[in-house]
Length: 153
Image 1 (tube, helix red, strand yellow):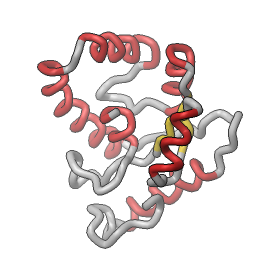
Image 2 (cartoon, helix red, strand yellow):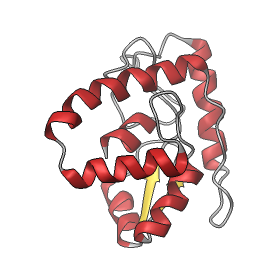
Image 3 (cartoon, one colour):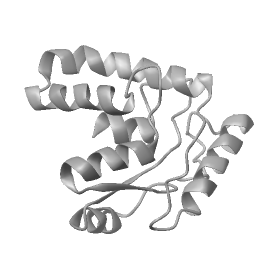
């Protein structure tokens, strides 16, 4: 998908959302290995969407997640400010992951083939989008977005 949306996407008829997403995708596509990952200044509406999903998932993770999940979330909260009120930057998450596991994040403009995605994992690179799902459907997206990448994985 990237900057192009299918007609059934919740943001398809929202020109402001489409332009915002295009700008974020363009920044990701300009990224070159070794550079700092472009930082995104998320809007209040995007942060509200993040917050909604964060709290909804917390209902389940509080009950069902393993202790290791809770330990890592506590570290993310302490070390980089991972919280419902602040969408974390990929550069900060990448530095955290590199220190803990050797993995890094790389921004991507949209969905990758399974081959490309798995190839990245073989080299300890996790590809992640930086755009956020449309605010009208915070608990649904037809393709991976930042919420899926950081809260879902």
